[in-house]
Amino acid sequence: MNPRTLVAFVHDIGATALTWWLAYLIRFNFDVPAAYSAAGLKALLWVVPIYLAVYIKFGLYRGIWRYASMEDIRQLLIALAIGALLTVGATLLLRPSGIPRSVFVLHPILLLVMMAGDRYLYRAWKDGFLFGGAFGRGTPVVVLGAGSAAAALISELARGGEWRVVGLFDDNPDKHGRSIGDVRILGPIRSLADYADKLEVRHAIIAMPSATVAQRRRVAEHAARAGLSVFTLPASSDILSGRVSFSQVRRVEVEDLLGRDKIHLDLDGLHRLLTDKVVLITGAGGSIGSELARQIARFEPRLMVFLEQSEFALYSIEQEFSGGNIACVAGDVKDAAQIDAVFRRYRPEVVFHAAAYKHVPLMENENAWAAVRNNVLGTHRVAAAAVEHGAGDVVFISTDKAVNPTNVMGASKRLAELVCQAFQRQTTATRFIVVRFGNVLGSSGSVIPKFREQIANGGPVTVTHPEVTRFFMLIPEAAQLVLQAGLMGIGGEILVLDMGEPVRIADLARDMIRLSGFSEDDIRIEFTGLRAGEKLYEELLADNEATLPTPHPKLRVSRSTKIPDAAWLAELLAWLEVSTRAEAETKEALMRLVPEYRPDDI
Image 1 (spheres, rainbow, N blue to C red):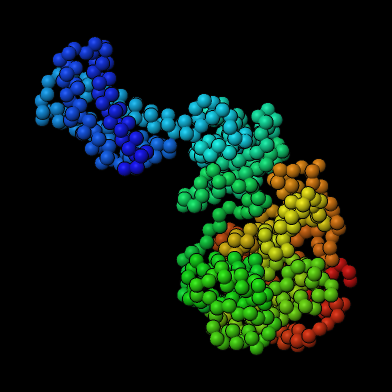
Image 2 (image 1 turned 135 degrees about the vertical axis):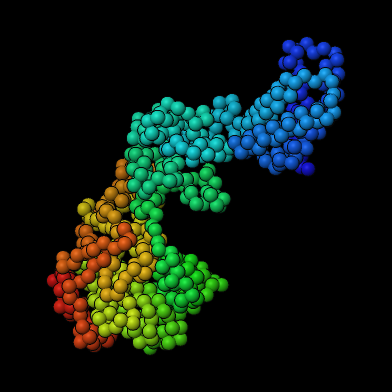
């Protein structure tokens, strides 16, 4: 028995004996006759051992007083009830004299008050709730949300001592004016700005783990407008699993405000698609490719084949999946012989083609032909090998920049979409599914890491144009919907992900500045002008396209009116085989092949 347990054990012995005697005092109005006094003291010889046996049996010494909870009180209440019944039973057997019946009622009540009270007093002392919140220690902070998560957070923060909660805000009017512990619920979240200076706080913690993304965004905006640095709780799944505690708050990131609510997947269908299958992922070391690998691994494929041109990216994904059923191939999707060898050796049944050049300005001028060959010829090589070697499913990752493109990258991806549809026209053995979506947060080339770096360096934050807008989605969300689209597609169609509402990049920059605890007076936004090939806004559908709903609320299906044939495909391949072409020649050819392509400089 460790010293703390021994102290608790001795305390409970003393409490049991003391409350037994106190019951006598109350019964006799603090004037116990001598005969009853002697009988009461003698009864302690068997009353105390009965209760101690019950305490041990019910595990009262496994808990820690500092973390005493309602569950501990429930266990204590049951133990005392059983102890009282056993005491009455022993009295009926032993038939001692001098024990009034009222003592059997008073004793367990007094014992419950003392044992529960001492445990909670100890916890309050250790948590700093006594003496006015441990003399006001810790950085003052307000908590947004006044539910069970806030109650647990207040308790944990008090124990840590780093933070001191000085106010709660909640939109439920029934809670206003009430308290959790000794912290008052001051009003609705929209009133936060009215209290920030009065409370002398500079930080707010969002304690709303079950709130939707839209609700979290609204709450974070109120806090940011009040000039507060905004923090949030860890994910509820991490808290429940025990990996983190409530007190491990973190700064709210822009990803928290732009994500979607939980995406529901057809897990049974995805198991049929992926479990015990050989899955090839091209561009496996990239943002989307690597996340696809993580999501696919959950469904236990027989083998995942990672094809990646970048040695470092391939090494990184290999290290992440070290020990798994993987094969890593360093190669180029434009290399027909190597692609054929990969399909011949591994016989992939499902292919996710994510390899692509994606950076618009870099691919616009001197690299135009490189973008076309990589994005279009690479797709042709993969599609041809998939048909020849009997792959069942090919999922091609496209982009919103393929819609009414104004840049080479977008035009090349639109051309790659047409390649997939042309191959689908020739076969029914292989399904070709095109999945189109916008920017993913945190991907290579995303504005988010760039903005973070600029804010960390004190600014300015550079935005191309005040009105430029983009669709955004979190990488895991995009990967999950790609899998769902791969399951649902019939073949030959374009599946469009629900990207939500477009976001102005300037507003995104302002949000990131505020969430970092600064204002635009501290870090200014500088507009630099649109870059080569860049559009003010992106679209998910071309002018001649329309979508229909699918059984999944986050996916819609688009069918193009014109699908090219085998002759077109052969002519395209001959054009792509040339190793180099001039920029102007490349763009002129793209305008013929992709009629909706309208470059800015021609």
